[in-house]
Length: 270
Ligand code: PEP
Ligand code: MN
Image 1 (spheres, helix red, strand yellow):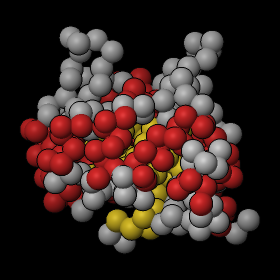
Image 2 (cartoon, helix red, strand yellow):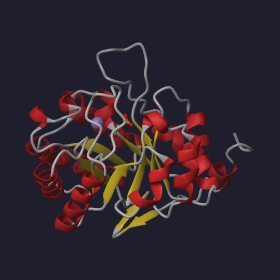
Image 3 (spheres, protein in one colour):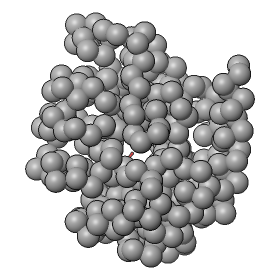
């Protein structure tokens, strides 16, 4: 591993801490929450206020959506980013949003506090090189068919361009199981920590695709030592334009947060 992953394995014992406002990612346990996609202003602002109230640390929401079908909702683009900007103004929550094209990195960085690279783009090397030049932290999702080594090599691409602020995100991989949307591989949390100095968060929403499984898997992620979670929340999931079965409503998210925070506090004294 060492030679290919020279930047990642170099300072394994010196944990990367990424500061965003008061938040110290890698040290403070954090929760990123928000809708799968930015659909309109009301949906996003209402959801942002709800996740803020429940104690989330950052707001997620896709303005550019990588969809399986070209006919499915593709996101609002610039309009979506402007809605996220307003949500940030009203709640103070930093924004995590996906970038799917290397040509968009510099202008999306004006709206995003963290640039998300989705599972489908994990090995989009020109995109990785571009976010490697950006002055924004990058949330790098694990590709759905990728090994740990391949995933870390993608992080190495970003680091090798100069951007040292990478957060790894386990979001499940494809297996023969069909009950869950993906198979959430929580062994990656301690494995990432064994191999790197980078923070690792878990996405139980895409990892399971089922609302009922999100809390148990999140608690397991906290117990495994994850530095945070990224969870989908929608003000009215029944009418969501994407991923409706895996988005919490505000009430469900509030209860979820109480349980997650309780366990993360307990973990501090372990
Ligand atoms: C997302 O988080 O919006 C998303 C599309 O997830 P993934 O890339 O993990 O499928
Ligand atoms: Mn989604």
